[in-house]
Image 1 (cartoon, rainbow, N blue to C red):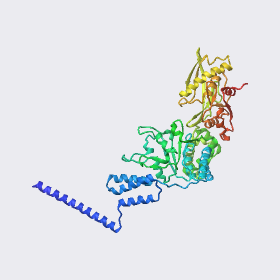
Image 2 (tube, one colour; image 1 turned 90 degrees about the vertical axis):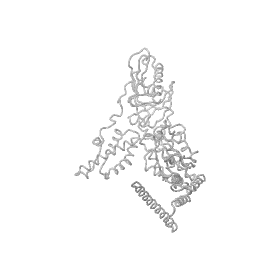
Image 3 (cartoon, rainbow, N blue to C red; image 1 turned 135 degrees about the vertical axis):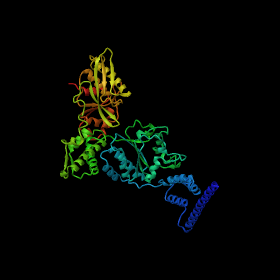
Length: 577
């Protein structure tokens, strides 16, 4: 009996709950119909379709995209709002309609205006500025500017990314930047297919929707650090994006309709070109952004870094004075890298110390803080580069070479000593040399022995001794053929027991017959020689054009010699008494 009563009670409660729900649903539906009849409420689905249609009316949508959009709108109108397919279709339409079809910003094609903006934002970088001004001049003559693919190649901290912002400002275009460093998934570029849960378009389509125009400046940062994983090879996916003959019909996997990227100005940045695949490199116009000279850094610090850092640290105008000599000491002894990022850090460190002094020394709050050579160390610590070079006077067997790295140019010494007499000539190499450099040492050893037999027949030193050749800073990997003439000179200097001309540096590949071959990175190497206090440099004859393109203030304190054969190098390194 108790069980029957309990079942009766439960059944009664269920009926009451169901009737309440039915009544509520019935009244809600009635309310919706009444509101709709009175015009107080619009159907959500109809309203959405109407909004999308109104957006499309103001756009110039290509025929292929318009066909897909109309099909999707028709599909959306037939779906129930509670259906999972409804939200998928709605998201897809949001992306299709959200793209800037036929919408572009009005460009500024006045060359002088662009020059003013570029000079205002960046000091130096003349090659880059000239290329952008040429690009604008062509656009002015044609009446339209087509998209281009530029690649700024240079060491860190020289302003490769920030120049992209200035280019966008000078052209009056929208700006978008994203880094592709370490990217291993093709979907980041080409988008996911819509069959996946949470699918979305790639970064290129996202950029167009974000900026709201079809002609922005898009910066692809760190393109030399693209990864490759099981999800595909992004560098291969970029081949379509960065090809002017193909990107007018770029097909994103998510949208699945062609999108015109021909109006976009793509700018890529890279520290090293050797890691960029050949086909991708071929699609870009490479502009080398070299490091800054000490004089450039002084101007950049005075015009940009110091005023910006002063404002960021809340230091009033005139509260801190940094003398010109102290600034030059800061650059030469703390910030020798080719870029200005480290200089910016040192300036900020210096101003933080000043802010601390201003806030703690209340009685001297209005007193001006003067920073000069005498008290610079109190603010930034001991110099990082206490000495310009390892050797003040190079002994026999030691010669300074010049090398290029992804961080810019650097000077390095080639050291050679005889370990012990030997019946058979041998050469041992240390200093983390790569395979190409090891081959250069073998070539240098063979050529030096043959050269000495011709010039000093009685000298059998290299044939009767074991030679140890070393490049200091053993923790740093080194490779490349450009130290060829330096190695030969070091071996000849050791064999003749005669030091080379002081404050001399050289660079150049050498063939087995003594022909001096051209090398790259001349500007960076010359800047490195300048930092090391070199007065005379030897370059390959075929690099004369690179030397002529350098600014006068870089060349002013250097005596340069060009050599097409090693005999010319020998006569300069060992001048006759």
